[in-house]
Amino acid sequence: MLRNVTLSADEELIALAREKAARQGTTLNSQFRVWLHAYIDQEQASCGYRELMRELAYARPGRRFTRDELNAR
Image 1 (cartoon, rainbow, N blue to C red):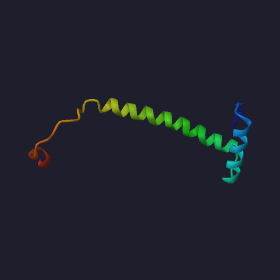
Image 2: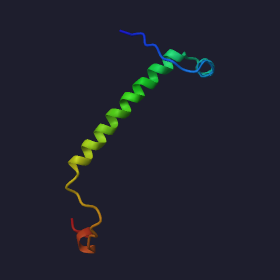
Image 3: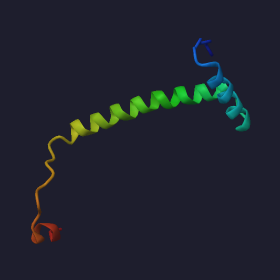
Image 4: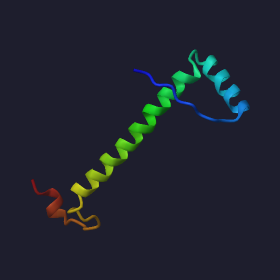
């Protein structure tokens, strides 16, 4: 279900955005929905990154391995 949202922006920016969307064969509404999904995905991706870093907190970078350690199988 789609819900209407009212946004405010400079008239010139809206006109330019509509023109760009038209050149891309889409609409400003459609581009807003694409942006909204990307905005949410970005948040989820950063949460996933922070969770991964917490899980890997035990690892301490900077230790140099010996040649024997590197070649051990």
